[in-house]
Image (cartoon, one colour):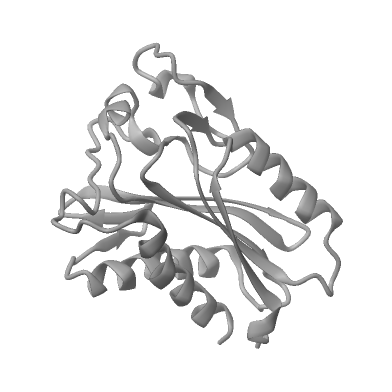
Length: 206
């Protein structure tokens, strides 16, 4: 069990993707067995990110949106204003969690949050993320080093979905995306972060 005082939540506001990514790498490299776990809440300016196995062929057309080759798992994704990004910097060994378990925790945190807003969502064993009526509303990607994870999830809230048309989201041709606003929920991004974080912390403290 992880004492709840050990999980530090930081609201970073809107931050450059590469800057936060480098900060996560540094935090993970320097943490010790006694370092508190942290959860970072942020939004990013428009950026496409490629996972470790990401293929540029899934970027269907050239745009002025930067493309960053990241060290997370997964294929290509898009981040932009109005999308909630939650990064989990957790000592998985200390929490007695494996990779599949932390992915399930993140997926369930989103599903429980959506349920609070009256939205029924599902997950897919072969395609990590959360889906509403077969459309992807949340994406996941993690990196694990020395038993500790970083990166996390993104949940589409109230954003311009157009840039998703330029990619095969998460490497799946024809995959459509959606967001809370399309589902009839009009809420501020920082507000939707509250139940998501609550669900994550509750799960890792079990």
